[in-house]
Length: 213
Image: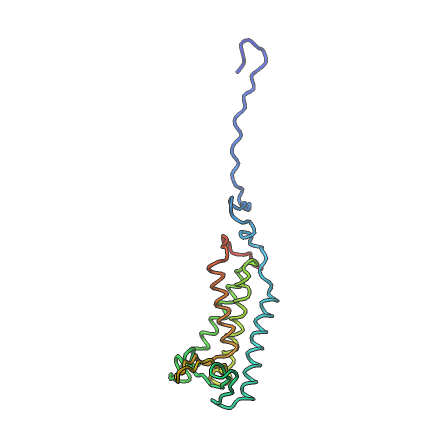
């Protein structure tokens, strides 16, 4: 097409097409979303830290149980704080508060070992999907793992769990007694509380599965 008043042709150009995503190209993070949380290669909390806390919890539990076996007789009491706190060796064949205490030994042991195994798998998987900013979770998971392994080792070795920490209140001739427990139970309880704190108060980020190692 030419302009009748001008010998030079009028150049006409078509609009440039809008470029779309190229196949195989990694898209950027949406506005307002933390990019580090969407990066499949984002770092996870240290595995060395996880193992150290879990092993320390397990070692503390096994050591204190060995001490209790050596220094306390079966179902005897060593008073530490009168009317409140003592060490008393007990052999708990059931769970917390004596759950499953009267079940058959083979059923009871299989049940608790299965629960312990599932707990280990759950904890390991949850830790792998956690992020360094989740401080409460970073501490809570290995504490629960160490405690679970401590009680599982007892069930494998003895068929029961050794408990020896005994809290109670004696007032007006009445005794209010908390079930006897051990260091593994303390680690589990603290770990569960930390996991709950992470769930309630830690800011969550969008999750994308990490790239395989």
